[in-house]
Length: 283
Image (cartoon, rainbow, N blue to C red; front, side, top):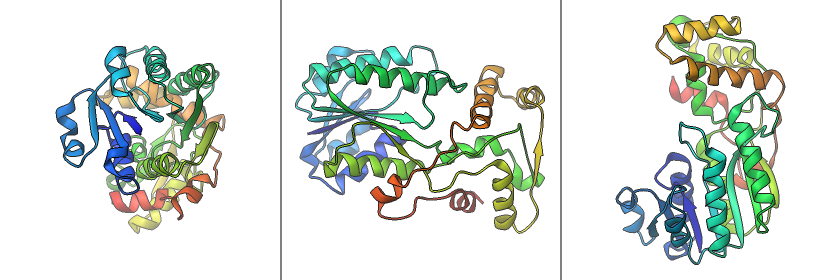
């Protein structure tokens, strides 16, 4: 059996949908905070059990009989992500899982300016020390979040943001499908694997793509980091969130998200969706 955590969320919910295209429902289980929200899976024969990283006993029960467990990274807005991930890993080990998979992030590292990347690196260290086979799915930066950084480019005709570096913006649905392929096909990937779109782009590139899609010039405007923070706060973004968002630019300037890997396209059997695809859909 394959058990997937966070299956009522966008990423792993999509992974379960992809698994249902590939495997009998009886071979799939989900571990969710609220079983009522997973009724649509239960109705189709998926095993639904309550479990959360804050409740290790329930989590172990939800993992019972699993050969593979897919752990979603915590989206809790508070600190303590690594401790929560530790609970998930320990529960999977205690339940006898033969392999643990984890939704990590491209550019994970202890020295990255991007805080989630540090959490992912620490979680990968825990996986390596678990004694169980493991795979870390280092997904590219999800393309839907690009909208948060671009601002109202269609109305203003410009993209105003701090200096940046290339980012391999990757479609979340493509990442979910790739996870399902790996789980269902039984291909063994040990340690971290990188799953990205085929091209990394800067905001200069994005402005050029947006100009083509919109049929009128879109200017790229570079602003100082602190000026950008002030503009975000003035627009209603809490300063801690704005400073978190700034770390994307800081990490991209170091090349943390610049790498691309053909593995995602190989797993999908097609080209992953691109920034152009995303902008065209949003436009």
